[in-house]
Figure 1: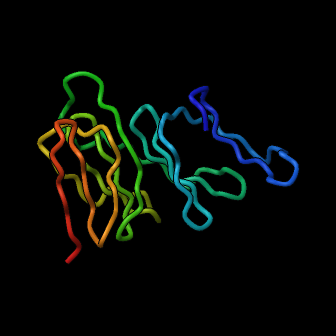
Figure 2: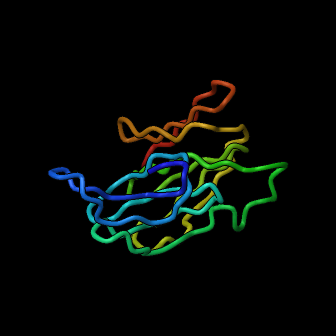
Length: 139
């Protein structure tokens, strides 16, 4: 993936490009099974077919959230507990169903969060820009 707007898949043996899609992102996509999940610079989370790069779904993370005071940037995603989770530069965490792209929940962390969450010990940890750690544990 590159900031030039291309996400591509290449063969390990010969470097041959299999496919390319136009996605502008600064975040590392994640691969789970035959799917690739990525965040776009426009605030969309996308699911692509790993085999051919075809789009499975696109979800606008900003929909349903209050308007941001300036540009809202997103970090992630992270796959945890059967959900994709992304965080925003103005303190929101949004979870998405990886199969359908449906938004499952949004949480106001009350502080800007630039880094994606971390999963450890059956918990989800958020590090806010002020250095505060917020933890959510699965019941």
